[in-house]
Length: 207
Image 1: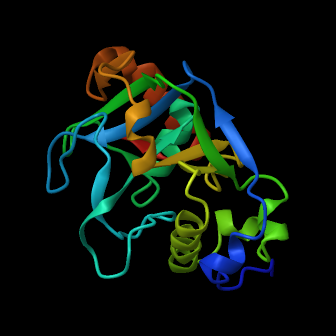
Image 2: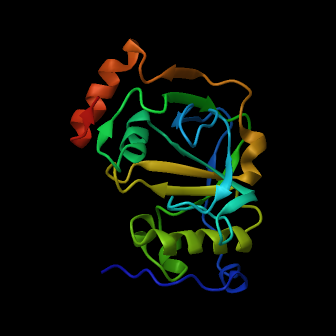
């Protein structure tokens, strides 16, 4: 099994130079979010409640509303479908009113690159992208404390052939645009072909 220990203390981690991955201004990122249901949100809203079961929540322990916030994104819409609907393996176009949004960053964002050699240098491995989530969250907490200039994480989606995914921290809030470049409900007929394609790719069911 790939090495994936507990993270070192933040002060010890800070001695290891971070591996930066910079998303330049104008980079397009995608997300699927829900406008209805118990966790309704907006296309550009960072989530302050946490930690949840999401892999890289850097919130402090004991779930509650916090100043620490996250926004999970991907470089392609297909990766969003894989990540968001992994629990049921069914792309439900209507339940809780899911929407697909694309946004362009208005400034450059500096992320810690978890897709290269940094995890190994820090004493972990690529298992940080796919290993136990509670431990990954503890790494995320340590990273946030160790590197004040890091605005989020650049990681490999274990559900979509290690394609790039992004989690922005609250430090990156000013990089979000005022309007999305693409914004449609999954129930919109124009997205049917894309949804069917995603379902076939991941062996999910389209509902």
